[in-house]
Image: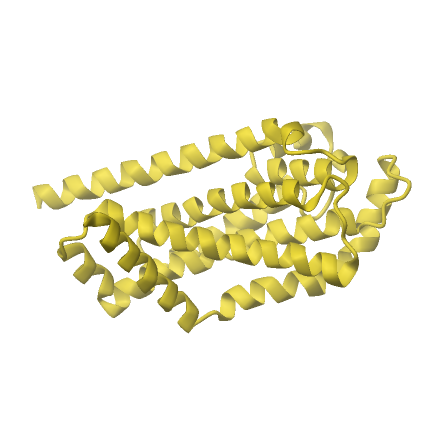
Amino acid sequence: MQLKRFAAVVRLNLLLQLRNPTITLLMTVIPLVMIPFMEPAFKSMLLADGYTEATGVEQAVPSMAVLFAFLAVQTVIQSFFHERTWGTWPRLEMSATSSGTLLMGKALVAYLIQSLQAVAVIVLGMTLFGFRPAGGVGALLVVVLAFSAVLAALGVAIALVTPSEEVGLSLSNVIGMLAAGVGGSFCTVSNFPDWAQSIARLSPAYWALNASHAVSLDGASVADILPQLGMLAVFLVAIVFVVVIRCLTKKGDSTRG
């Protein structure tokens, strides 16, 4: 029975997202506009790192995909607050559907949207700019899917812990720009000072870009990037832990009330 309700929650949230795909489309188109401007700078950085045949697109496409995937987290946050505004979320909470089923349904849709947006940037980067990862598209796809899971969880966590949509969106943009920048979306981490390179490891963007760099330029396979995928899994578990704690706290508050 819960499986049917889970499917209903997923279907409802997909329909709500499809009704207003503007942000997702923008977060797919804008990075494509940015890539040609970032490509020459990344080429210089990669040449300095010893990649004599690099064109810059190998770093520009994944970097812009990561940056705008972070910014697209706002769609997850808005989906929560819009449902509260429309009154659909309170009605769902009062239904026979468990809160866990509701949350997992919304999280799955968030993950699908995040993955679709990031994959679209990568695929269009290949089509428009000749981006060809040396390690193969499959390995890069694994990185995208793992990173999208982290960002979907981040969006759910921010939506649950912030008091309003305005605060949630502001927080997600600050976190996104900071984490993407520190992780190497604007400049290869190898060009950072030593202390900044250490700080970069605290961002999931660093591990996603480190893995994509290995795949795109070094020909790495999925087996070669397991350490980076493991670190993304650590970030995912930590964020999910925050979500679970917040849900339990909220449930406890409701029980006492």
